[in-house]
Length: 118
Length: 484
Image 1 (cartoon, one colour):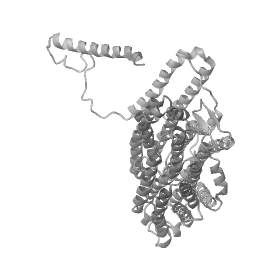
Image 2 (cartoon, rainbow over the protein chains, first blue to last red):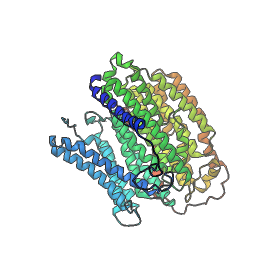
Image 3 (cartoon, rainbow over the protein chains, first blue to last red):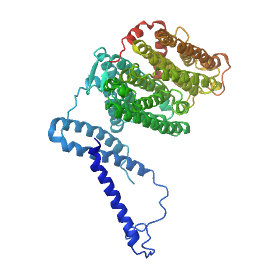
Image 4 (cartoon, rainbow over the protein chains, first blue to last red):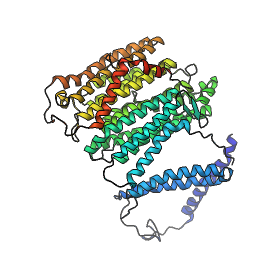
């Protein structure tokens, strides 16, 4: 029983050790010559504008909800695809029922103007 | 990976499935079909509820089970399903004019309400902790939204927020209880948990007992037992009145159905000694509810505390257990549903525009300006107080009678004493309505007779009287209730 979880434990130890060694060794050995550009949040990326603690447009909330809805739909497809060959007709019908329910939500969001991102 | 196909038999699930499909149809019809006046959506919703009721009645006596016995359509579950469907239909009728007066959207409201009905019925049919949890979430999420549905009203928003935060917290308790029980028994199916619990090593396992205790917390929150009752007054006061009516009766029916099934099937009293704990909760709920209701001046808050007290009375039936307890509980839930819908319906009917008469002072003299609504309210309150010709008396009689027969005389005595206390606050609004001069600022006659509202209230009041005068039919029905 507990032996089943041993590989998981090994993975946990290795991943923690990997991260700790990477950060620790570079902190010990790396030379530190800070400049203004190196100190930026995203070096060689977008210059940051203002603080992160500002008001966010409420519409992003809706975008996030719609994203999560369809993101989870896609995730359900993966285990479904793995076992699909074992019972094709049954699984196809089940997935169609699932997608139909999501489609109702999609039509609702669309008709209510949830996709008008002006 | 090898896939085991589940046993698919949708027929016993139809009482829950039809409202869910109707909810989707209402949602689609609302956004796809043209036209400003969407009142006919209510008709569509009512047809869906009627179809679900038809199949519920058809399923009676068959004792079917489906999905590897995680769904059980026995008579007890179907009786509760009928109560929930009736409460849903009455709520739709109560809501039409209420929503129009506040310019709230009907389509979304109906879809959410039907979704809640579907979840409640699923919870009543469930014989598996995971399915019970699914039903619990399926009805809780729409109710959080419906509580805050009047979103330009601060009270309504507050109610939605409070209900959501406390409700999700209690769901977490419930889920943790399921996890512990699964850890202790290796099962989520109630019958299998019962089989595993017959081993003394499992039944005395602290993990098992803790799981059962957490389930009591989860159920106690949903049915509104003290000491898990803190959310009830605020949410019931703030939510739109038809939703308050629906929550107070249908949530209680669904959560009590699962509560009864979990504790009568999964934890037989011979194995786990939970009677004393539940008896204590019943006493605390009755006392807290009735004593707190005495000082309320807002009628919605008063009825909220009264619902806590009523949860305590129903819990007595679970302590009694067995056939007698089940029938008494089913009768009580049906009676409580009709009389509470009558009381809240009278409250909606006495309103005017988007204003409601909620405090005792505003109710003063209502019998002169709105005689029919006042009469409906008076009958429902008398029934809630337990006066003889009405349903409430018979319901209390059966519950207390069952308690005495089972040897819980002390519990019955505390229940009767509590009933006596409650008479004061149930009679107070009646005295105000009939014996005080009219409050100012309320018109003599309604602008337009709200016909649907009137139908719902009249049916509720007639059923309150009928169940009080001729309890035989309903009693036979309740006595056929049993848990498979």
